[in-house]
Image (cartoon, rainbow, N blue to C red):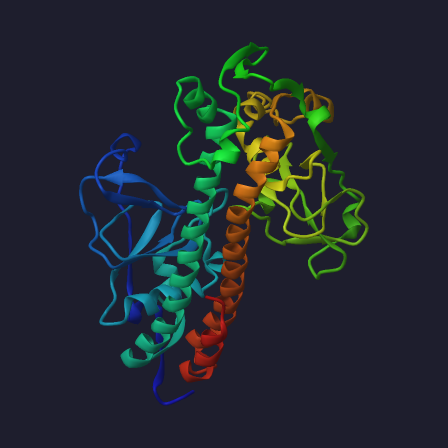
Length: 403
């Protein structure tokens, strides 16, 4: 071991303390985030811990280190770092997220982590200077990942607002009905919208639009699950998605592959969860296989952005297929096909695609960059934390990473 590193116990590097009780009704006001083992669950008006701080899950969901720059309130389902003992807080955060805490689970039905069992854990740490150097590298990657994800979330919100304005609230039509120019629309796009609403089976809709069903407007592929013997985690076959477990913010995450798939989705297809919970959506990023918990949808025009946001707008309809009690909710192909939907003109859908597709394209780039950076960070983290590689050895990789 290099001379600037030394072996010790985790309890000599930091002290973990159990979080505090806070009734659910008290987590609704203030500006101090309330932190559970799974993340932020509300706000409070009092500070329990001054930032910066680090929290890990103690009960229910164990491990999963969280770093907080500002003040916070850790719940009793967590352990928080009461004393960094002069060590760099971000290094301590990185050290904790590199530990597999499942090996210390002392619970039975509900996973539980006992701090007295993990304080004696042997660790190897560098001097404070070395800690800060490692923290600088890891934080630069984390900050870039967070920036990309925040930008992606903003782009998603912009696209959803646009869809809602055009196809749910009919803002351009209402503006023209009032004798006004639709705000924010080019003249050629504004001209595509009628100037009055008429009654339909779904309530008021723009004149000239109609009401139809999913079966007539979208191509729908219901997933099917091949034999379990065809599943693997080594990359043999196509990425295989079964449902919400595989869904992330926008695009599903590779977890399982299938060597003999029977139902497929193409890049840009909207993936809809059809088994508990019904209606969660993602978008296929590549050719993939879909199991019986997923359906793949695409509008007859081929418009991927319109399809995605249209499926999202049906969230309330999908929730009607969630069963009560202990029975899992689901939606059949017949029921899915029968869902009513509004049918705009083809030219308006084309215009929406032209406006929204660049937004969704930039969002995809953000997500791809985040995944690349996450892979790089996850590969570097254990090597940096253990001293296997030096900061100077990885600076070139950081500079070449996407920005």
